[in-house]
Image 1: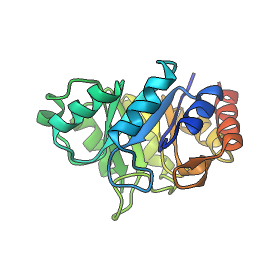
Image 2: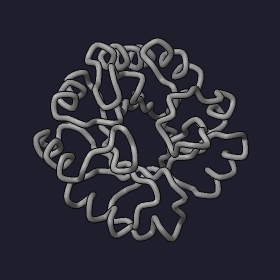
Image 3: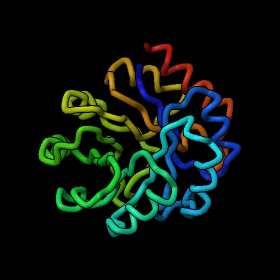
Image 4: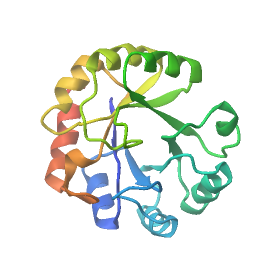
Length: 203
């Protein structure tokens, strides 16, 4: 079964709605973003969910001590790294990590191989953003990356296109944010439900 992650959760209502739709993982952004939440806000939402879904904290080049502190406060299951973090950096983490790579060109395949992360996100490239671009990824690159580990596919996914992409790439998981929103940080329940249905339909 393909894992479904909804990122950019900013409030309890959206979190509960996503869980009710069958989402496997929720993402909370602690980096600069329109969807940014404070550790205290995220901790309150996660505590209220009572462990019924996996939770991920999104960071960009944050000091490792701060990442560990937030992960402990919030009870995060994973941290998602979107910056220039290296092997030395991840060796200091106290929780499992997911490394994000941006597919500017096929050179990203060697980056993924070199890093050797068990689980990784492949997102589309934007020179002005570390992630959450909302742009479609080059599927030829995604297909090659799928054989390198547990690929979570991101970048421009919507309820309208996710089934096609899952069938073609066969990723371990898919990650959506803007594709299931009515506004930055505010999710659309119907879009989330449709997104999950389309992924599950692919088996």
